[in-house]
Picture (tube, rainbow, N blue to C red):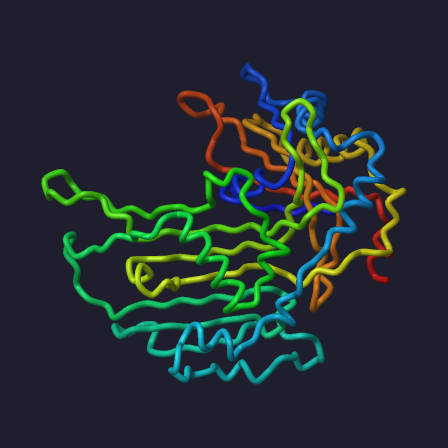
Length: 365
């Protein structure tokens, strides 16, 4: 069984836009869940696309098209120009080493910077995986440190739509992120993945709250060759979540420059299809539910607030790339039996379970 744990409240919201999902809520009463009740909750949370025969589903997931990986699309000179302009940054000595003493790929990062991170002058940096198959890029720009009063704060005036489009444009043109192939459009164009950072003040100051930053959150999603529609809800599954997150931040200086002050790409791994996996070994709905219920029960049981199960893709690390495996992503929010009033807590875990009952040695081929 392949499982992973992550605290991921923000990812839950982002991923739910990508896949048809079921939700199950905890039982009433003071007793903890037993394995039978947990099994019922898991079955109730299963997306409709999961049935007792999932061979076609697995085949569909294995055939998702992939964009150009960052290991081929990222160009340091292009990224350097986007981040530093005509300034020539300093590179850390670690940039010279791309392998380990034993001949393996270096899992570390190379950093280019201008200015001192701990100083008061303007500072900017660009870090990226030496092995870009890992898919990590980080850009940060900070102006000169000055004392500000509440009245000095300048708001971000760009619209959410402009912030969203500029984020996509920057990630694609500056870092080579395959946004057209691997960033699905929001299912509701009126609800964009843009959050506002607002600073408020006491009423006595006479200063209105100021939106000082807009942050665009992007989740990697791969287009399914065959789409699925939930006849009950009318929702359509067009993309499936895959490893990779991006965040782009704008502030008041971006109003004129049209550039972000920060951009982070995390775990946007180079992915390769697992062509050796045979769809005929796909797990049934019952088999998968039993595996999930047993795993959650033996992990402690307890009250459950919400269970959400989504179709997804996980990646098994293979050094310079990740092996793409069909999976379900299970999000569980513990119930708040000990809170007043009782209800779901803010903590949540995410686990991934393979949709295929493969033998571990197959993964070494």
